[in-house]
Image (tube, rainbow, N blue to C red):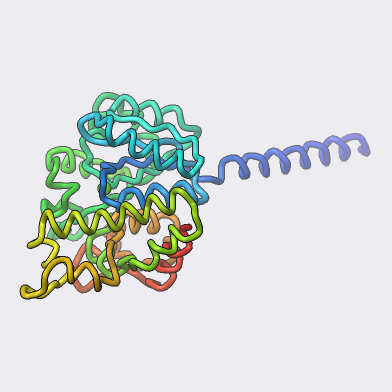
Length: 301
Ligand SMILES: [Ca+2]
């Protein structure tokens, strides 16, 4: 009897230790980011936030068009952060990152769906390993209130509507969180926050500050009408004068999507079946604590 009890306790403690190890190794969520990173600070901010968060960043896929420039840009941001994360492009890269992951994968889609859909069409096991998709964009809800439909108004939808439609075809099995522009508008990032990023000398923080300042300057000069409309600049005010007095210089469209995954407690999503909509309709920003989000972004560097 004594011996049986001894074996029982040894077996019990071994299983407890094994469980603890599994929890420790597996508790970090696998995250694949699909980005159209460019000179805009938005995707860059999301990448920095992901790299500094408690997630297992298993890959960054740059999309679409196999852009070597985007891959260089994303790799450069990871180098500045001293992070060794696979960066690639195209459906084969997405397939290999997802299928070789240990466990299920969350996908942060802050770009058009082109390559993600191509990867799924080539290999359905890709879809089976995705446990949720976090998408930056706009959607409609059908009249029955049980389906979400991509809205062409959103850049990530309009760039490849066919792929967006196909991706949303998986909504019966994959939960989507859609974070729209009204959420991003309500949590703009201050110029002083970017200055703070650069102040402590972190090379990634300096790079992010420069991207934000250059980004808003280029936007204002290259598309002055859109700039005036987005930032409510009076028609009689010169663009440079507006830039000089602007307090907020970036709407974190992409970072907001990642934050909805990292800190769901800060949001009040509208549920459509298994899906969550945040800030996709005017007058319903879907945010519970914008001060906490502001602090989270402020503390990035
Ligand atoms: Ca983007």
